[in-house]
Length: 141
Image (cartoon, rainbow, N blue to C red; front, top):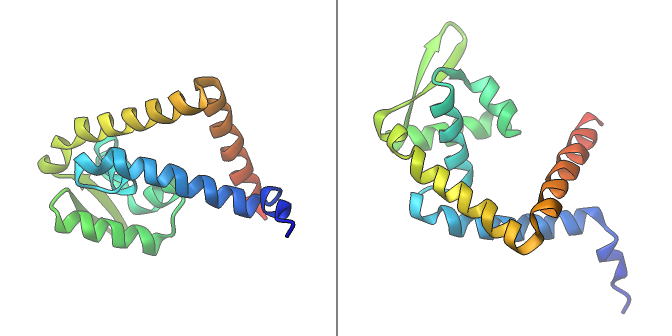
């Protein structure tokens, strides 16, 4: 059976890459007690206290409803808090969330080092640029 179509298919290869990097990221973020997405969300909130949910949704490229579920979970862990200002909801770190910053940064650094060791630094950087560019182009249509 000829399966070469799988290797030429962006859908298949992107999902394969996604599974591989997700597994790696989950392993590196395990010491934080958070998934990688929660970790990056907390880093954004810690870096910009009072950031709006709309801006977070855009930066993380996730739907507002997905972001709301993520924030609900992080509020339940007392890592962030929401404050409404009119129709806009702003997200702030709690002291407990701020205390995780260095642990999250270390996990992120380990992840980068791990895939750069495997792929090579230049290739990993160029791959990131190419994936970002492709994502932007595909999202426009």
